[in-house]
Image (cartoon, rainbow, N blue to C red; front, side):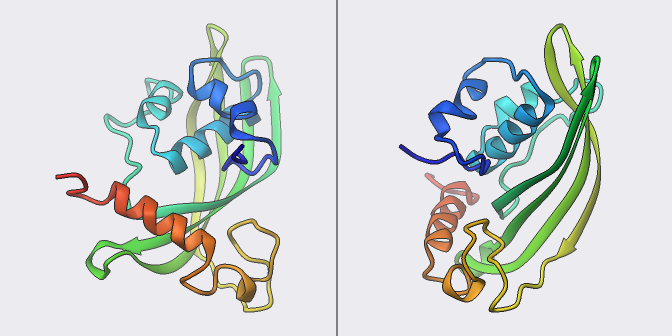
Amino acid sequence: MTLCVCQSGRHYADCCAPWHQGQMADTVEQLMRSRFSAFVLGLKDYLHRTWHSQTRPEEVNCDSGLVWAGLEIQSSSQSGDCGQVTFRATCVQFYPDEAGIPGEWHELREVSQFVREQGQWLYTEGDSLWQPLVTGRNETCPCGSGSKFKKCCLTENSAFFRRARQSFEHHAPGHGQ
């Protein structure tokens, strides 16, 4: 069984898969985790379905060249039909003109807002801060593995970069044509 990409430590089938398949999330944290994993997996329909109609874009973009690596939920709260999740997510930028060569790491910190309508939690908006992520060789790897960066994703042959390159190639413009 495959561990869920939301980094809950649970298997995908027992974590985000039920929400991706139509079950409603009971908490805002569950919805946040399932939306992160939907971005990783390219599940645009799910992201569209769980984004409030008054704030969602016409089209959800999962093909931006970003490959999401890690999610850390820092806090989660809900009261009545309103909720909030503060999180930190890491990603690496791949560049299409460089044959899928991994580029810079980035960090997204966001305080996300949610509302519950007719029993379903929906993402409404987030206060976001994007910044480059500079990681030293001996620091914890930004992919969330817990290993040192130099022993994990510092090399292009790491397991994360192999998976990321495959994901990038799958989502790259013109793929399958």
